Image 1 (spheres, helix red, strand yellow):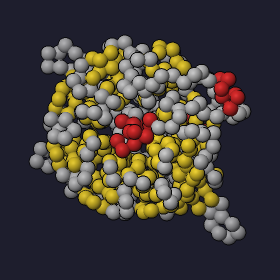
Image 2: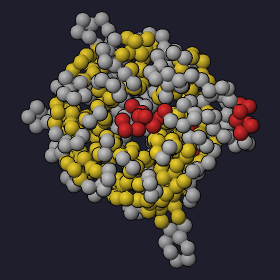
Image 3: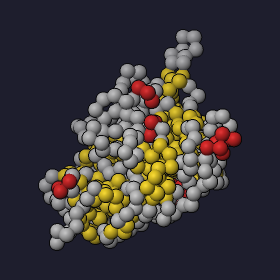
Image 4: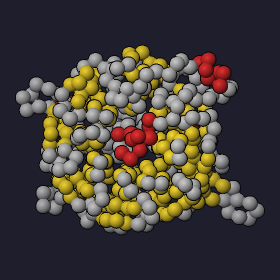
Length: 437
């Protein structure tokens, strides 16, 4: 599995068609082991939510369970994208062996949703190595059939009967946000690439949703599951690297090239067939750039070297090629007006915002006058940038690049408007901090 160098983002900031899904449901406190009385005893009343919060309580509400960071922290402390999603203050944490649900309203025990068969990878075995080998990604929260669902994928082994060979399946698990104590339904897809000894054996995650199709990536295979019938629909040709995104009814993905490297392709979520293929060699970076565009990092022959390409998600046509000095480590759409890109560290860090339709630069930090520094970025969401500057948390207006709030309390890596998730102050792991303004 390649480690992708990108901004740590909220899932709701990059899945466009699922943005509205995080506002459904009743937001109730999850039922925890021991019964609802125990959950009510340990939880405080649900807090108020904010569309684009700029202030968080300086004191954490709860510390998240270890599953939020197990096998996920780089040496040096940089956090890769977390396997965490939020829904009205309830925390959902994908694991290679299930799904943890915990209330961020107050102290409570997490409920763990498990697959029907034995998972091929256990969470407790993912903590070693330089980066950690926990393959879990954030679950998808989406509304369908009048309910709001949390969808997560796990690879499990089905034990053979008699002389029938055992085999692996990808189980798509669904949890109703109105009843988070149990699994509402599940569906299984047999894994076609069998390798019991591969380090990638336990890899599976939900990429996104297009129409009624949920797109899943597992062991390099990209396939679709129909939400209505809850059955496997299609498997896309070829093998794929991590980083696929869903925009509308299209999956934009990084397909492996026979000669090495990646190639950006557009695939229909309805039938898994190719819609377009980029002719250029790509690096393993891909992100949603706007309502109908993606940002890629591909070979630019005439410009010399690799450059960020802004592509039309429907056709694959180039909308713009960013200049050579554009930040090149990661980009993220703010969900409103601009795509924000960044790279570098310390005094070499730079941040720039671009028009998501034509790629024109809107603003850049450090500024030309040398009066402002570029912040490190934890999250781009709902027209705001949350990050750190001069050792302190700060919130910027994404459209203008101007400081929005210089004392936000914390700089979250994830927020749903009810709580913000970030590193625990004076401690280890992650904690939830309540949004207060």
